[in-house]
Length: 96
Image 1 (cartoon, rainbow, N blue to C red):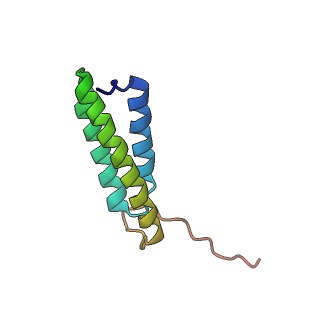
Image 2: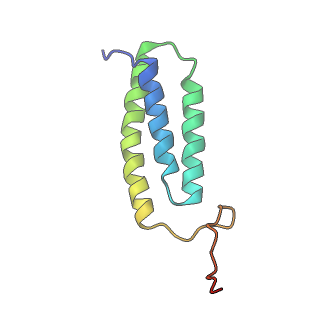
């Protein structure tokens, strides 16, 4: 049986998943994965069973690897920004 992950390793995994979720260029994907990560870790927050925690950690570590690959592909083929996203200000040229 695998040893249960420490609270620090679970927090590190949580922050890694949030950081990776934020790296999606697509607004919808980005917000979906952030919400999903927060809700998943909120559900397991009060869990004390070491076997369940170990299984959860293993599953989410594999999911993090998939999430990283998906984020890279999304960045390569990202589309236009949506209206709800903050737009970068366009600077007009001043020839004064």
